[in-house]
Amino acid sequence: MKNNKNIEIGALKIFAAVSTSETLTQAGEQLGITQSAVSQTIKQLEIQTDTQLVITRSRPIKLTPSGQVLKDYARQVIEDTQRMLSDVRMASKGGLIPLNIGMVDSFCDVAGVQLMEQLKPFTSKLALRTGLVSPLTQALLNRDLDLLITGDSLDEHPQLQRFPVLRDPFVVLIPKKYSQRSGLDIQWLSENLPFIQYNRQSRLGALTDLIARRMNIKLIANYELDSTQTLLRFVQSGHGWAIVTGLCIVRYPELLNEVDVVPLASGNHARYLTLLSRPDELGKLPQLTAEICRSLYSNEIVPQLEKIAPWLKQQAYALEKMPAI
Image (tube, rainbow, N blue to C red; front, side, top):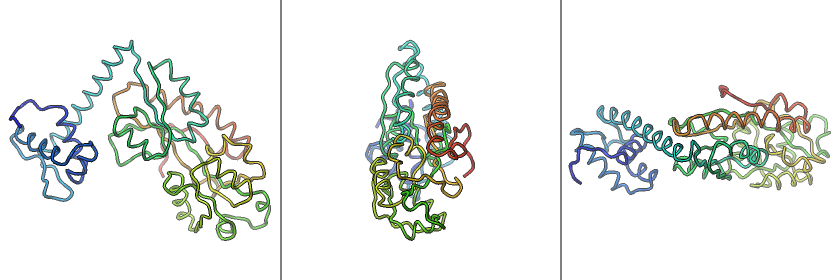
């Protein structure tokens, strides 16, 4: 490679990825390039800056003091460039830009259409993607999504911007034929009735396991499902009990016939939805989107939850600040 003193933005992006990775290989996987390409870029940057930037023989790799300085500058240059490109695109569209949004299925099912309708005046084109949290997360990190509404705040990626949206409480679903039994509690349910669980690879399945550990109960899942509708039908048919969230049940009130919805540990357990974006790229659009989501939840979804179980109004609410957990 030539000893060109003009550092390219692409090289700074690679260096920024290296600065947050444990190995050059990991940085390459994050960027979709080879370890060799990463190594060559680092060597070229060290030639251009006339100093060592990375200690590659350590595990995890470490930055030298010079590398730390370049890391800070690289982050600022990348953010400024992204902001510049966003402003240029907005100007070319008369102030409007295309927007790619990802969101968890349970929120999309009850608020997706209304959200898209309210965002349309601010965008030239809207695209919506739903599904499992992991692929959506990767799409955001790969810049295939601009905004992501998710139950995982991705604290391991501090560069992302976060806007709290709502508290989605966990509840217990019990077939009515069992719910009138005296002395019924979560411990009795776990020991005596079949448990119907979300797939453990899903975010809700993982959170259910976490709740069980916190409550010191052992859940033996007789059925493991990835569809809320199917899960509710299993409970309605009397096959067992389940732990779900308010958003999961609000779309299917007809499947709650012959089912009792009861609080879980006095409402202490909840999923928190957050809107994630990259900083300084979309102006006030991420904040506006979060505000619309909060309004839809408070004014349209919570009243539906209250009809299902009046006590849910105290547990389900919009958030402007994430509580300490």
